[in-house]
Image (cartoon, rainbow, N blue to C red; front, top):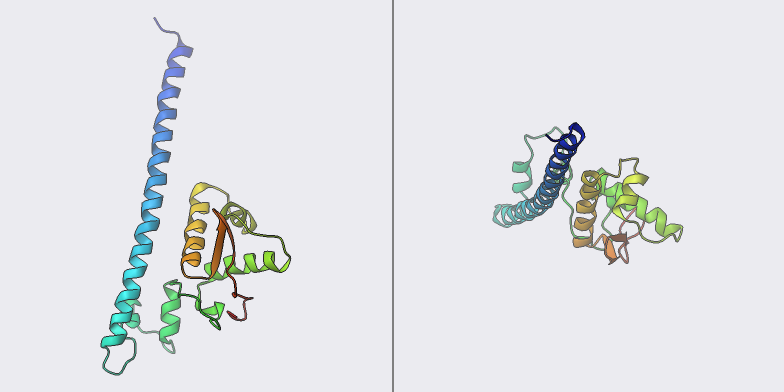
Length: 175
């Protein structure tokens, strides 16, 4: 007859393996979710561009369709910002076109750049923002940072270490 301690160790081992399996599955799902969100955003951009081209007066009709309803005094620029889309950076583009989350990342990296402190990892960003440095929070920041890299706002000269891209300046503007 097995001992009580032996039975407890067996149950603990089974539970630990299950937790590890679920963590791996959660990591896989998180990565798949980030990829799906990126694809979704790119399709939304494509649809908006097609809507702009096909609009009879040349204005963008697709942006207004994305928002749940017209807001008094809103412009298409405000409607696009509400969706947290990241436009491709170009000289003179202000940070205000980005959502608050993206602006916060850029501000932290601009402060580091101004103080000549070098790049930051997403885990360091999470701690800097007062977030728990748990995988879900760090991966959410990594997804945003990677999106900023892909759109030219940030540079990733070393894997996982982010800085402002060349030419991107402080919050007042993009040049």
